[in-house]
Length: 186
Image (tube, rainbow, N blue to C red; front, side, top):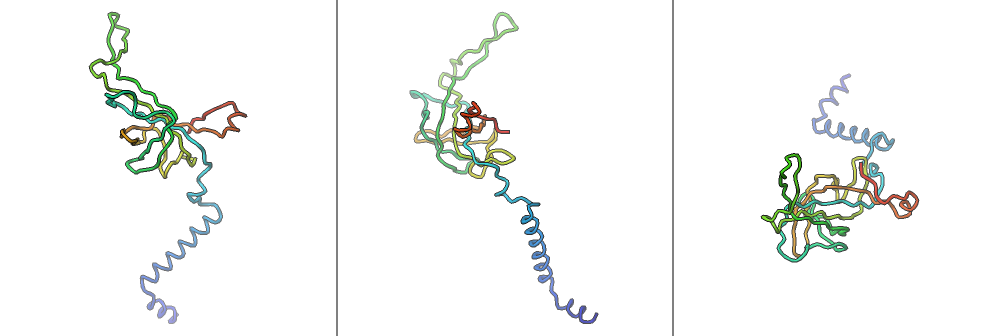
């Protein structure tokens, strides 16, 4: 018993912290090795092509046409962090509208707002490869979900928008067998 107490007096608090750290690391390693604890790499279920729509509200355009075109590329930033150039699959724009009442109080009509002739809402469809997890699609370390702020940048434009829709694009041989072209991300 005297040997144990003399050994205990020689142990410093730093030694105890190191020993406890090594024990915790061994326990975590054991649970990871036996698949009780999943690492981030094992949470990825698949890699798939995704298409997502970016809605840009209230863009003032006085020139001829839209600055971005179908089948071109645009550079995106996700949450103000530069990511990559992506393919533009589709671009849709619509002038600002206003609601006017009619003589019949139960009906209204929607017309283009002539007071804001150069104001447009734009929906840009982009495509990229994503890692599919239980929580959804991950692009550039960011989960792509509706409401995510994204900045689109080209030679002569920089627009801030939000993700408004997200779809998985299956492999071409799967699409032929299933007769489907896109799937919704849950």
